[in-house]
Image 1 (cartoon, rainbow, N blue to C red):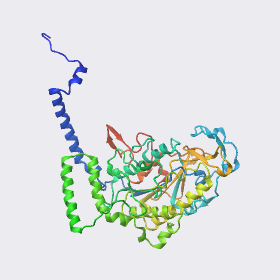
Image 2: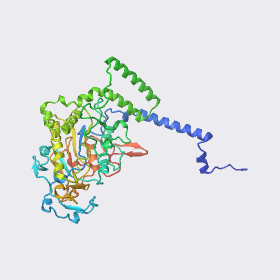
Image 3: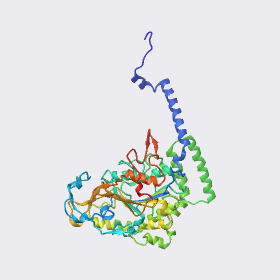
Image 4: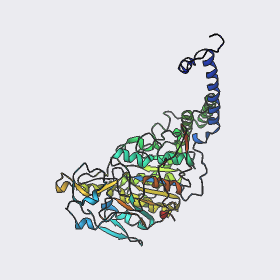
Length: 483
């Protein structure tokens, strides 16, 4: 074009920008940016190891033990006494009580009264069901939150929300966030341990303890409560200690050289850290989970002498031994979905309470007598609760309750929690949380606060977003529960 500069249409420019000098220049610039980014990541290795990191402020709790009751325990039969359920037994629920209640795609049955007698317990006079006689003895050590609510009435989304703050899978769990924020006080054990049921995985499986897009080192480590704590922990052939030390030293140098060539890769960092941790765990994990070292009286207190309580009791005792050794968070699960009592609810509650009540109470008592309860936050609860009416169609002996996302109960103990406290309430029939409502995000914010972390400041930069456990949802620390 004579006397003027040739112009290239924008679409043509972008379609040809990868060619020739354009592409070479762009590749050079991008490579420099990537190298700087990787160097910055490599310089900050704190997110890729388990070294202890300072909290935002002085914590009340150093560790968390979560007793997760998958399936939805029935709050109206265990912790939330509603006398009017007896008065209106068998009658149709009032329409006003059903407004905004989820799961009304199923025709509600008649009002179902509490299946067990309630008693006032401890100096606080807290009302707890006779289905939980051992927990009742700990009434003055626990804070019962009767006004929890969630936003989904199906198991998987509600489980994801309770663990990760969102309804979808793939996000970091509470335990992963705790490890990301605080690391571990014991470099010979995982910071985040999962003790699931030998009979099978809980509902949603390993999604319950994933690290999501947080550094992989933050993921929960499953440890078996029967047999070797971890498979393949020890080599098939034993070698003399000097040979092992030389081999580990050599591997360490190889790892360091490989890391230098590939800086800023969290998966690589996590894999190397995992191998190093596995070597240290060969003794420490076996020792930590060896309950035979406990006295006969302690094992009996947890119910290890009873086939009904032995499995759950063993895991509760292991949890105490782990936090005693500096593990940051321990989660205990049951087999699949044991609290999901759509039918035969009285029988089902008797069975699940019989398995868990004595061990859970023993855990609280044991922590307290060892001076550990003050620094260990114990939390109990499921992903939602149950509705106060029965399901239809059911014959009377098969009666059950459907899911209730609008109002349910959890309890907390230790770690700076005010024992003997009952916080919040549902309506007169137990359908909805109405007073001092506590969301899942409030619950998470309170747990983080007790561990010395401000939920607004515990962030992870990802794709231009400042990610949080509570995300951008409204949340508050429930200070009324705190000492």
